[in-house]
Image (cartoon, rainbow, N blue to C red; front, side, top):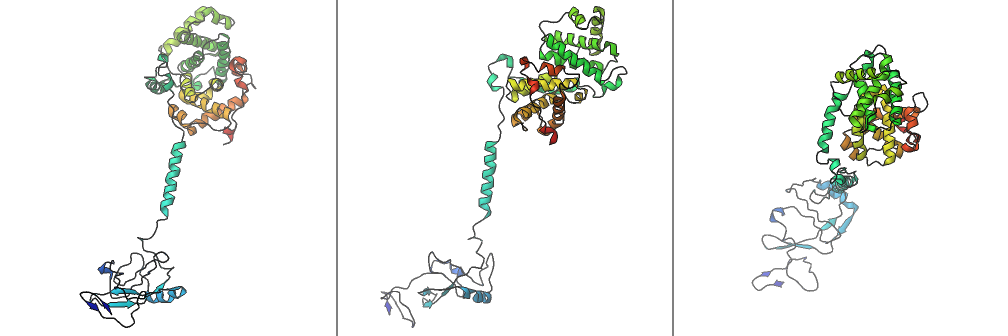
Length: 412
């Protein structure tokens, strides 16, 4: 008999006492919400750490699965774990009932969703970490004009606007890729012979690189609008170089020098008359962007050294001789020359985010033009038109003609 100061609770037969002395009734399940207490027995695990507490009730909806009680009784024979002491539960009439519960080890019953640990969370975390690591090691876009901020000749304040203007104006400087079909007395091979000869003249006179590019540019624009006979084609090349020198050079060759290098094939009056015809045909519009204008900018984006600059110039001058390269815009020619030179030096495809940003050309857009440059590089010096190859085979131009071509671009 357990006595209290205000009431006494009668002892029930079969009561098991915890310890040697009778103690006050424990309210083990008093913390459970009364709404969860039904008429059916509860399966409760009393051990704190070794077993889980699983409660099944027909009146309580299970968010995952409501097991069949008969099936559960049959499957629970696999592992039984008996609780040493009974669990005392106090009902609404304050009567103490003692329930001897057998705790069954359930392994095949689904765990409630609230207790499940999400398995996809670590995977998502790893994916996010991989993406963040890719962003960290991604090639940054460099500010190629930052180091020239104090150089007034670099005009860094409006250099971007200047090249945007060049990109818009290069459409006006492009000629039809089949303009030679309009000529009845000259062809593509004659054009190649003329330009190859002008490369040697340009080298002998030690003119600036801009002068050569402007000379070829004026020849193509003039021949695209004016029908010319073959005996005066060399005269067209001389006048184009004379106009380019007047535009780019400080010291301009005199007319007598041009007559001398032509082996006196033309007179002074012939040169002056052709100069008037060419200027009127071009409407005195000489200041249009050439590949050299873009080449200087793109080599700066590639952080080029002297070796890369010479190789880029070599590849693009080889392209000037070839008529089929007229179909490419000046900016694309310059970008392809830088890309091909990088591939030749490094031995693999090399085109970073900085180059792509400043050229506005992706690697796929450059492949067609670059593969043609590789073929010109392979056959340079083998035919009769070897003026560019001889020029870049000297120490003055760093023996750039001796670099191996990027032949792997042709196989991919």
